[in-house]
Image (cartoon, rainbow, N blue to C red; front, side):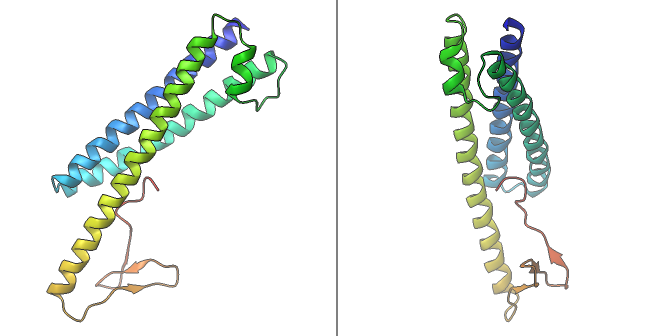
Length: 165
C-alpha cells in the first residue's frame, strides 16, 4: 500500500505541474494578445493545445493511481478523494489533502484564464471584422452549412482560438 500511495502522490504532483505549465502558457498568450503579436500568438496556441494533451495524460495517470489506492482500501475503483483520504494512514492525509486542494485551485485558475483569453480573442476577431467591414463596404459574413465562416476568397476560415473552449 505504501508504494501505491507514493505513486499517487507523485501523479498528483505531476498533474499539478501540468496545470502550472498551462497557466503559464495562458498568461503568455494573454500578453501576446495585449501586445498584438499575431505570429507569437499562433505559436502559443499550438503550445496550449499540446499542454492540454499533457494535462489529459497526467489526469488519466492520476486517476489510474487513485483507483489502485481505492481498491487497496477496499473502496470502489472510482472512489473520490473525499472517500479515500479519511481511510488513509494519518501520516498521508495532510499531504494528499493539500495536493488535491492545490490541484483543484490551479484547475479553477486555468479555467478562469482560458475564459479570459477566449473573450479577448473573440473581441479581437470582432474588432478586426468591423475594420474589414469598414474597409470593404458591402461585404458581409457568410456561413457554410456547417456553421464555418466563409472567407473573402471562398475559403473556410478557422477559428483563431481552437485550443481551449
